[in-house]
Image (tube, rainbow, N blue to C red; front, side, top):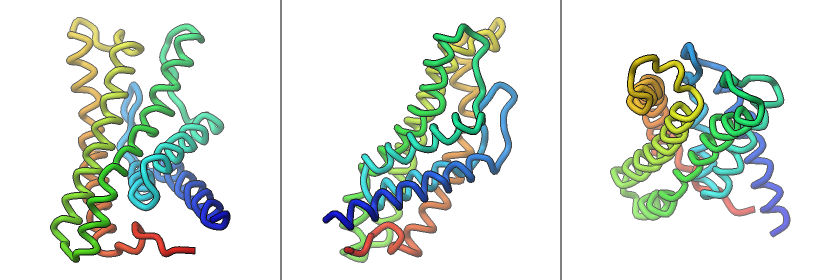
Length: 193
């Protein structure tokens, strides 16, 4: 049992490091947000080890971003910026771990050798993780980046602005995770230690 916990901690650390690296590969938006592959390792660990492992991986990615200065601060007071940083760099990645809620459906489909059901589980999990992350960024945009909306409705502005990059993030993650998990299910189904 102790070895199993160590293996899980190592997997979380490795996938958090991979997520940090993949978050630096892509292209960014002017006021923040970027199209990257950071969701793939979070979804992988969430499907491999469950929701808690996905949440912890997202937390570690946020810590790595903060530690390396890879963050975008809202032009507000320090106290408010702390909340903005928590939302955009911790909470947004942590909630992506809820993709693991579809892990049991994936495992069941794998055991029954139903590839279509496996694909649906991965797709729904990826959509859930990406949509939750999107909503956190939308809320952050409403509360902290409203000045960029100009004369537009700040809620609509945040919904559209964040959708411009998160829709691509969702698409890339869904395609990569579905192909990867269905073609190499051993990545998701851990062997017992």
